[in-house]
Figure 1 (spheres, rainbow, N blue to C red):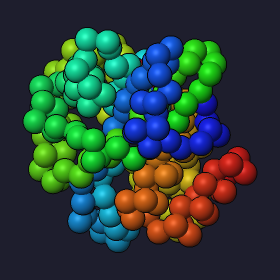
Figure 2 (cartoon, helix red, strand yellow; figure 1 turned 30 degrees about the vertical axis):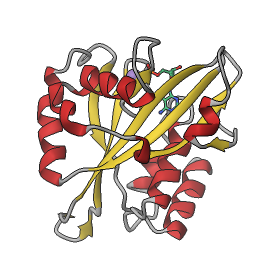
Figure 3 (cartoon, helix red, strand yellow; figure 1 turned 45 degrees about the horizontal axis):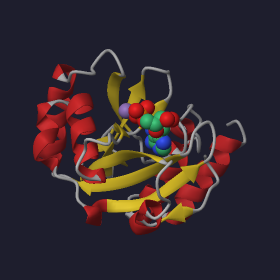
Figure 4 (spheres, protein in one colour; figure 1 turned 180 degrees about the vertical axis):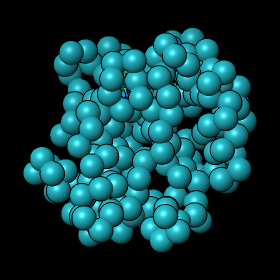
Length: 198
Ligand code: AMP
Ligand code: MN
């Protein structure tokens, strides 16, 4: 799926019948803290360890019963993050792009991002172990390290060398740049370092 073109929400819906849709979301909050009292954390960005051992974003397949893409996303977020996700109300305006793949099945993966307050994000983290999918499809939430440590490798470059589901790694890089959470030059460097096998 990885390298395909990024479509708008409207373009993706025009693909017509025969395509399944999935929606995933990046939830983030400004985070003023410093690691070791020195390294700025910048933002708290949530991903999750999945049942298959890969990192991904919360979300999943949209059902024909869901009234919209966003209704399907809300349902998936409640299943995976618990009832604390109910008030999040991701909307069409939070859509960052969609990627499509023909194999193994015709799938359109929609990606959303939503800014929360740090208090809201912490409440989500605290409630997530009560979610229906906790310990099943979701093995735990993680925060993404957005900094690079002095050795040039620790932090974001090392995080990017994990295994990511489908296009989740590209979605992460795209969002960190587009939302201004990590400077573009630092992002490109972290991407390059992680691809070189550290
Ligand atoms: P899920 O139910 O979360 O596993 O997602 C449904 C489908 O979307 C699966 O086929 C996954 O391969 C795919 N998928 C999962 N996470 C992502 C993601 N972050 N980006 C794109 N596709 C994904
Ligand atoms: Mn899922």
